[in-house]
Length: 249
Image 1 (cartoon, rainbow, N blue to C red):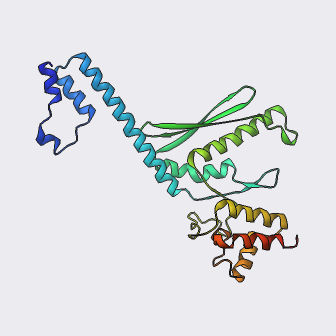
Image 2 (image 1 turned 30 degrees about the horizontal axis):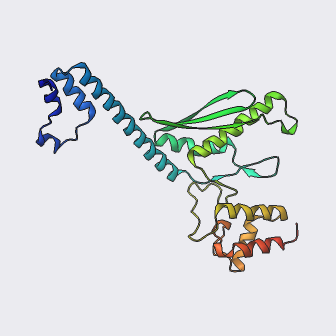
């Protein structure tokens, strides 16, 4: 080993005890001490891997923090099958400012052949990014022309790829809490989101409102709050049977 390489590899004990030495520190020392090209290239590769790992960690931390700040998003639109959903504008209105606060942003990459492909790319200011891709055919339902069919599928895939990337949950309604930026989470031991949606679907089929049912369930001591989401899991089956027994409005 050359004298220059020895000088690069030796770090004073008192210095390591005070300040962590990064690959960039080592690279700078190598250049300053006249290390050969082979050593500098190895240290550059080490620095690039270290930098990429740090960027990935920053990305993971930012996504985790952002998800904690993103509330359930109210389903503000109705599809052709009468199912409620949150459209892209509603999702973007909620998530964009929160993602920005955590140094995150997203964009889409699209391609089209027989099927339409949309890739959602989520990036962090530190440089790391991840992506997810969804593919689907043009949406020709509802007498759309060819361009409208493509546009509908693009919007659909953008919405769902972003939801998938962020792991978002969409609330079927806000149970009278419109405008609440930080809705309370369901009580421990409550039904799942899927079960809450199932109850809402049953109520919709009967022409009854979620809010009215919550009031009824509260009177029957099946629920302690005014929200369907808080129904105890043990009372789910009883609620299903009760709704099935309702007369259609």
